[in-house]
Amino acid sequence: MESANQEKQGGVLGHGRLRVRTLTDKLKSKVVEFCSNVKKLGEDDPRRVLHSLKVGLALTLVSLIYYYQPIYHNFGVSAMWAVMTVVVVFEFSVGATLGKGLNRGVATLLAASLGVGAHHLASLSGQIGEPILIGLFVFLQAAVSTFIRFFPNIKARYDYGLLIFILTFSFVSVSGFRQDEILELAHKRLSTVIIGGATCVIISIFICPVWAGQDLHNLLATNLDKVGDFLEGFVDEYCKTSSESTKEDEKTSFRGYEKVLNSKATEESLANFARWEPGHGRFKFRHPWKQYLQIGALTRQCAYRIEALNGNLNTHIQVSADSRSKVQEAIKTMSRESGKALKELASSVKTMTKPSSADSHIEKSKSAAKNMNSLLNSDLIWQDTKVDQLQELIQIATVASILIDIVNWVDKISDSVHQLSISANFQNLEPTVSPEKSQKPAAKSPTTHPDPHVVITVAEDGGEPNNSIQTNKIVNHDELKVPESSRNENSSCVNRCD
Image (cartoon, rainbow, N blue to C red; front, top):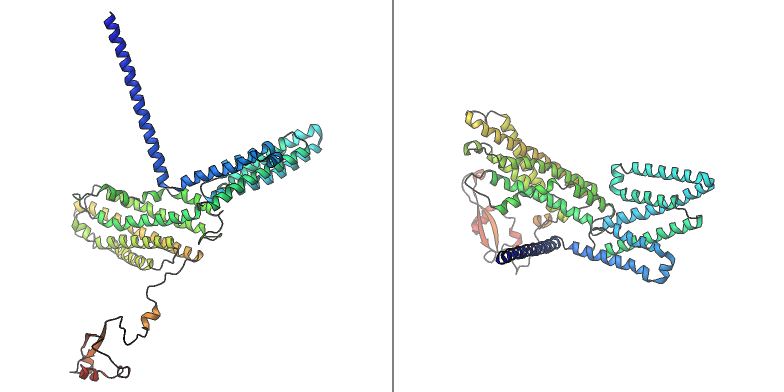
């Protein structure tokens, strides 16, 4: 019995140790996973670490109000509103911080003023009518303000301000203080909100600022680049046989366009924040941010059609080389030229230069689309088609039709980028050789010859003048020095010299 009890006790203890060890291992793995996530979050965008430090600095500065007796004497417990303002106003970007700060400050000023007025009017109606009028005022302002919040434009930019307006008006008008105490309460709250908001705005602008407009600008250029990458690589991927495989990292870069499909909310949010920001860099205060949204919408429309193209890559229909050869050149031209045009437009947006180099690619893609459309409507592609090849041709025609549609959307994107370049005063891209230099070469010193050769056209005698044969000879500058006066002589003189 004793030995059985000992064995049972030992088994329980062993089981307990095993559970403790298992829990310890799980805890260690969770800690390691958490640390790796923290590291990855900071490496993805180091500005997040700086933003956290800036928020800590703002809260520290505002909290010092409690330890500076003259300020604390004036505000008292109301100084807590400055701390609350920093917590709710300080956002990641300058535009978001400015928007929230101005919304909170203006809403507090208006609500405090109207609240004091409502309290004064209600107090004139006597002890019985005062609560009735105050309740009526609170009901009206809350109902009207809440209804206004449903307007899309108001909700996008002033929703937080309306929320603060409802809260402050109710707080000031419903309070049971006397008239002089109400004015003091409104003054203290407005002052502390201004202190907290000003602290956030100053730190956000002058210490490692994060501009929402710059983020929107870079996002738009990146999205155009991703769509262009897909179109450039589509032909090679489409023409691959089933035996050829694509590496996983190549597939990931090839499918980068998928992030463009879900970029609408981010673009609208950044554009809303960018409207609040002051002029910075090459972005003026009235920069055409709405045009960015239009280009982003056109880019997503193009990405939706690319999603359909990608579905044709994953189809199980094997297109024969004979069927593909009929339209392969037009498909290749449409896809690659459209991709090059989008990448040129992305580079133009990124460098803020006018997109002149993309026009040639667009013209080539439109010409190929026109030829492809004529080919699809003709009998050339459909004649001598067997029944078993019909499905292949339908699949090819689907790809060609989608690419024709993509070419039209790329043309619209180009027009929109050109309009942006005009509205935002993009710079002209300076050519490497100016037209004046190409037409009129600069005079060179007789002793220096940057160009070691010169091409001379020699007309050989014999036969009629109209049937003369012209040949080119390359002669070194050191071997031939032609006087200025002899450059206009006839060709027979040149033959004799030769």
